[in-house]
Image (cartoon, rainbow, N blue to C red):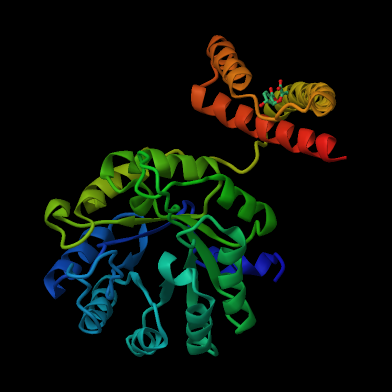
Length: 360
Ligand SMILES: C=C(O[C@@H]1C=C(C(=O)O)C=C[C@H]1O)C(=O)O
């Protein structure tokens, strides 16, 4: 599969002057609940109503969705509000039912994207339709697996495609429910600039107070849309209560979010930008030059260790280097977390270099 301008035609057809907004409850709970939310969203920037009908839950015993019954409610919400509809499908049977109820957009959940067998089954089931398919990232940070799932739909003849970034599972506790790992969608945009990219801040955040920040970051990174869980009474939602926001809060948020242009058009802006980018290029050259020089000395130490039969890893020295660089970083307004990431990568590469020298 290659990037093609046509990948984004379905999105362009919306004719929006703002990112696509998909909103609605985590789960369809009752007909009244879904219709009430749909009507509240009708007068916002929302174009598509979302609602989970079948809910994959981490543990059994929780509310697992109302099932096919909810599809009728979605259909009615579409008739009454004109909003398009979308739901998650996780097997061929879900697809058949969603198609019967004229759901416009089907999304593939993170737990489904990890399984090529199921993705293939779903791709076969939507073959021959003109449905829009949005593929959420797999739970594990694996870009090839994510794109592989998209490709299965493309190969089945589905051309209206897009991806949803919902964050990645980690064992460590972070401030997020699912770590954003922004570099992965950035890499994806580099390879497929015309594949619509939508942020699902609700599942990354896990709590409503950081949703706005996540959405702004996405717009700063040229995302094409937002999928936001919305409920008129979030605290009493049957699933994901902490991360849903009200349709009113969503409306306010879309007003407050700053939409950036992909490129600047004023000559003065472009001049200043070019000057600063030239400065960055020079500094990047220096960084590479210094890293190369550092690595040459590391090789020298490796040769010395080989001669004296001394181990590569020197924990005491390594901790001294780290401690000194954290302080140095502080003076240069660089966060400890960032300094640690860079120096751990440098240390790993030093070890690789010395391994090579010692085994030569
Ligand atoms: C370069 C050395 O080998 C390793 C690499 C280090 C580094 O890159 O700074 C530090 C300690 C060692 O674990 C060394 O022993 O000084």
